Amino acid sequence: MKVQTKAFGSIDAEERQRIVFPQGLFGFEELKDYVLLDAEKQPFYWLQSVDKEQVAFVVVNPFLIRSDYEVNIGNEELAEIGIDSPEKTLIFAIVTIPRNDDPMTVNLQGPLVINRDTRRGKQAVLNDSRWKTKHDIMAELASARTRG
Image 1 (cartoon, rainbow, N blue to C red):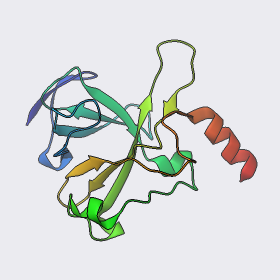
Image 2 (tube, helix red, strand yellow):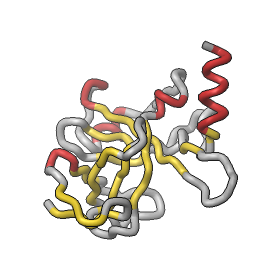
Image 3 (tube, one colour):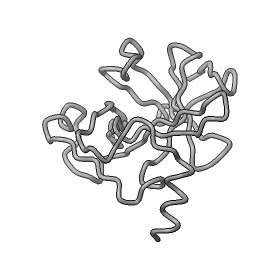
Image 4 (tube, rainbow, N blue to C red):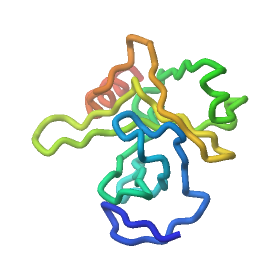
């Protein structure tokens, strides 16, 4: 399928890269179809809207930022996207890259939970006070090195 992207212009994406968020993402509820693309800089990815090329998110595996990260989501919420076992689950967190000298942050409070088999996902909200919407990525990684 052809997808117009913010970062790469027009690209060919495979169906296996497509992810549907039936409820959309917070603030973008009307946009439901996305493709997951490799970014030039690993371990990051692009989550690109299929319907609106200007809407794309940088995402990362949150466990790379915080090894102690925990995603506690109720079974009922997981069932909404057909997840009945941890093996079916992919977790991503949205990264914010500022335009000024502010630090790059990651939202650990609102992870993206995706069913690996069906490629259906949802954005969850975690009620754990450890997880905020803006974790400084470089500070978290530096802290992990001193703890580790």
